[in-house]
Length: 289
Image 1 (cartoon, rainbow, N blue to C red):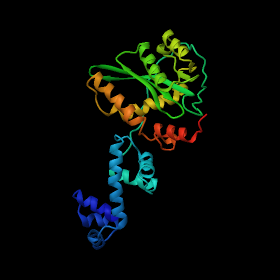
Image 2: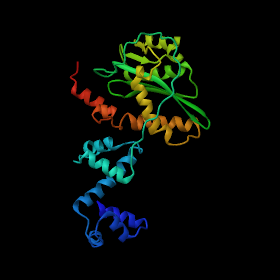
Image 3: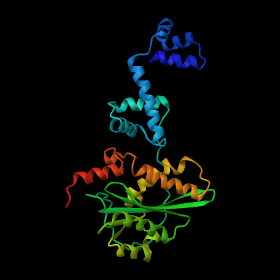
Image 4: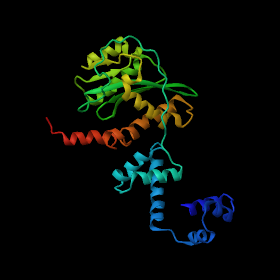
């Protein structure tokens, strides 16, 4: 609205008469608009704007308009259009966190067949897991994190954090996943990193009755789902500040996974439910065997 723009420019020190002439509106009309009480729509927008700011802050400043809209609609039961949410977020200067590319390393020879063939689809929990390692610097040294992700629900079923990239890192994450889920015949898909081609990791897979799978080429597409998870963690947590110590970042990763990502963060691919909510809904809807 032109009157609103005149008001904003006047607040920046521009002359009202000149601004009205440039925008093609009358001064009398502008002053009448200024004195007019706010409309019901303006009041509703102001209330909604406050709610949007609170949701965005609660999401750790990570949600864009689709997830903010989902939180309003699904979490709070408010009937509001997505375009209206996007408009208010632009006006407020509130936005989600954008992606950044990830560096890749040359893979080793595969020791398992590719049982996934880039089809990251599962009909239920614990049918297909994917796993990978990421790293991030602190002033006290690098932190390495391994995660095991359930393809069906996007739940992180296992993870480990260390100051090294030895095979113990991936074995510990797998151990947590198997302890939590007690799977049978689950496919565990990874890249060709030396940790995953190691004898000890293959032994743990066989010992737990799991099936190893590896991508065929040095492409992130071959492990796309876990790459997407790392991208989310990178932009929503790791890149948000400079980390001082390994313990500080390790604690933050633990809290982000267990207190935010698994139980609360909404996923577009899960109908705007969190991984835990999506899996619980599936369990409730599936008759017991």
